[in-house]
Amino acid sequence: MEPVTHFLTGACLARSGFNRKAAYATLAMTLAAEAPDLDVIWGRLGPVAGFEHHRGITHTFLAAPVIALVTVGAMWLIHRFRKKPTVAPIRWGLLWCFALLADLSHILLDFTNNYGVRPLFPFDAHWHAWSIVFIFDPWIFLALLAALVLPWIFGLADSEIGARRQPFRARGWSVTALIFVVLWWSLRNAEQRHAIALVQNTNAIAAPVTRIVGEPYMLDPFRWHVLAETRDYYQTAEVHTLHDVVEERSPDGDDLIYKPPVTPAVAAAKQSWLGRVYLDWSQFPVTTDVANDPIPYDTAPQPQPGWHTVQFEDLRFAYPGLGLAGSSTPARGKEALGAWVYVNQANQIEGMYMSGREQKP
Image 1 (spheres, helix red, strand yellow):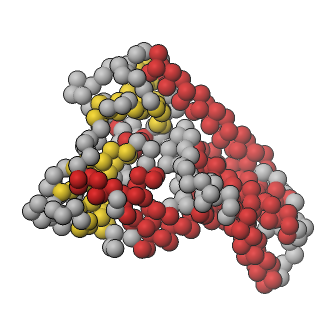
Image 2 (cartoon, helix red, strand yellow):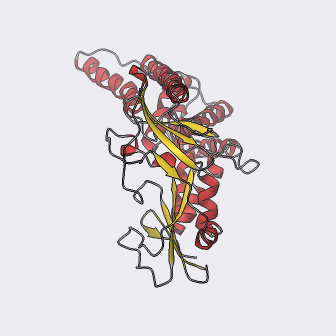
Image 3 (cartoon, helix red, strand yellow):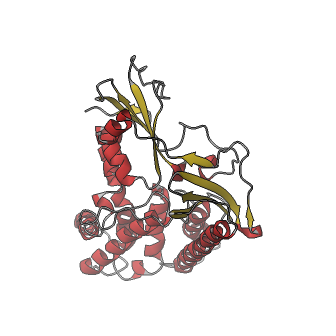
């Protein structure tokens, strides 16, 4: 999920009752819930370096206890310089457990979306993705935000009438918000299974299916983008589970994506640094030799005569509107998380590009 949702989750977890058990629980759990995203610093080394390490070691069960320990260490330093007494008791061991729980909440939230996580890395590099919510879910965001803001607003009203301020007053709001998140996940999980079953039962796909998944839309839990793989092609379908509707196939054939041939340029691009990293992460990759076409970035140079441009895309992120309310299919080559490699006549790598930037060797 995006960073603010992680911060809000940690704060709501703490205010659901953990802040009564140990001092600094709210601050520690809020920071620990977002700490795994410190791996963004790898992006300073280039887009492929950042992509390779994103949701890497900091998003694992192995690193979680260490991140929790570092968080508690920061709380200890704050305590050393703090002069005011704490409301809750000082319990460093218990605070470490709470920080660990908050860190694990980060892994769980990232698992629920369609980008995925590798919680067992480095022992198992396999990516796991539940794919029931989009990377940003506005309903989860609003529920968590309301659980933190509304008690503060009501506290201002109480102060106006002279009511005594009550410590730990937001517990009920936070518990309610966390229950909502679990129920929301349950609804989306059920609707995702429903969408896949509708496609399978309507015989919308003629060839035997080897894999099938349902990708979420951001706002509507009853709308799904189903993606199926056969031996020769991928096929997509738009599904509305509330009315048990599978949209008719596109007359333009946009719902069929044939697996492109592996040319010498494609084979070379797959062995590049970008290719290895991308194919390790991608679950529905399409790697296409688009001849001498330029990379669709203003910062990318024009290909030289005889070069090949190889495009990498993951079909999980190539559906209409990227989870928004749009209905038209995005132009090929403009999908989110796309990447490109220039290959010269000798099948050597001349450039790697991602996120509008070039990856330097």
